[in-house]
Image (cartoon, rainbow, N blue to C red; front, side, top):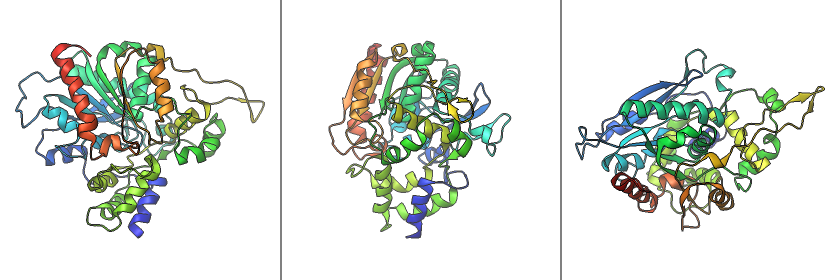
Amino acid sequence: MKAVLALIISLLIGTASASPLLTTAQRVAKYNYPVETHKVQTSDGYILTMFRIPYSPKLKNQNEHRPVVFLQHGLLSSSDCFILNGPNNALAYLLVDAGYDVWLGNNRGNMYSKKHAKISSLLPSFWDFTWNEIALMDLPAMIDYVLFHTNEKALHYVGHSQGTTIFFVLMSEMPEYNAKIKTSHMLAPVVYMNHMTSPMAKIMGPMLGWSSTLIKMMMGNTEFMPNKKLISMLGSQACKDSSILQSMCGNVLFLMAGWNSKHLNTTLLQGVVETHPAGSSTGQFIHYLQEYQSGKWRKYDYGKLMNFWKYSQWSPPNYNEKNIIAPVRLYYSDNDYFASVIDVQKLIRVLPNCVESFHVPYPKFNHLDFLWAMEVKPLLYDRILNVTNRFERTGKQ
């Protein structure tokens, strides 16, 4: 029972940060796939870690041309989310074995990207960012590095949750990056959020989802839900297949992602708890709560003080969806606490080039099932592979 309590506490509040039990590179190498670790520095000094699976040991295609696919994780996650299913079901391996050069990104502040050229992660200034900065500095730095390193002009992009948010922000704010996208696949797309059903958002949104001047005074810039080695070890034991407490581990995830899913592959729970939560800034979390409260897709509301404790009526500027001209595919479901059907359908209407939207036919499919459902390969990943393969053959969407 102590292990389960430790797991719940770790998911809700976090403790001292540490490395995962195994890194992405170590997990990939365990299956005898080649793996590389790459570092890239952003324009504001953050040092990001990317992992690359360059070719398939099954195809032995290291000397052949391999199109690039870039995979980007969501909030509180990391590159591990795309490999935990193993070679037969995880998207990273499926793409590699289909002949692709696969790169896995990690944004600032998660357990793989906690270095800065000048600032220690122990200082509040390190954590002074939201997903706006991740979109405009981390993502272009990683994409440009990958394209330069592979001598490619464009790549295929797959994002989950916040990985979709930052994609849309980048394409909106820096439209020149639209030309660097061959196909894009948005799993559980998070843009508009005012119909979000997350219990956490409903409780904390009214308290934290408004102009953040006072919030920053009270909370400061801090890390939110870091990865903890001790808690990961305890949770790993509680969530493994042989544990009688495994169902409770699943219930913790359901509370956060969508209740009563029948699709979660419970054999993955041990790996999930070992690697998640992977850490983020409080600003990322608050920015999403601001989206929920305002009903708008816009930049972070820092607020302004006037005449001592009195706020101005200034509002942050909205992002411009009309700049997003890269071809976009959306994949969404009914039981998603963060990407509601109503909000995704609004996004479908406003995107200039939404070439496909796929509404998952299972009523209980939740936010994390896009990564770890038992049916995720035939339901979603085979669809993504069909699209990327067709594009590489014909150049058509």
